Image 1 (cartoon, rainbow, N blue to C red):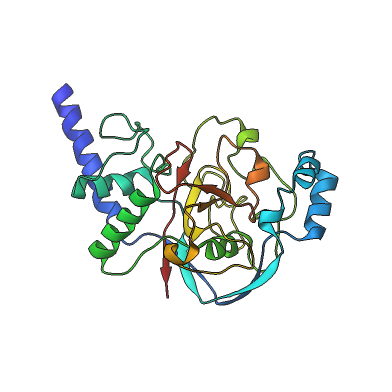
Image 2 (cartoon, rainbow, N blue to C red):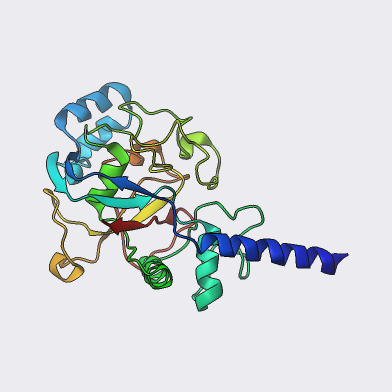
Length: 269
């Protein structure tokens, strides 16, 4: 009986792998301007509604998100969801790439096929992009942080994907008390961005292709950036919602791995 169950499990996993080898679900973000960063007016709103904002003002922690400015972007596509465990398992299965640190043996936990993959470095994320691009014959990449932010907040500069006030029922942050990642789309549609994109804040931080530079935003290469501080976006399940704002910027080194750090794909049109 055990062998029969193992065979069924293997077939089910093989079916999942085959399904994940199809083109990922992407959402087109139209070309045009959007407001990037945090304005003084938004800080005033946060001071009225959030206890933590006063300390951030005193410590100058909003400065990395300022000044708020307009950024013009070409149209692009971004993943409807972060890359999932089963998506990443397909990559490992076909390439022998290293397994995420938080997996048990060579597999993700049972029942978590559609949870966002986590515990991978930027190098791992880029290797996945290279593999899926070659496999599907179209170029996938990481979004830069301006693309990520526009996809999260739209063009009106809102603080959270759904508006200017935090709601713990719309995303998986520390306040949700889940104490772990949740399945992709668990907070849809209430937590989706104006473009219908799921989980842009909370659940897992997401790698971008960008490096930490002062604003206004410039999309430049690692060599041009002259810094090793990589920008991740979106907050995560064991971080407070103060870091789950659309404009919040966090930095880590490229080899950093965490059970709260994953990624989603982007593609130029």
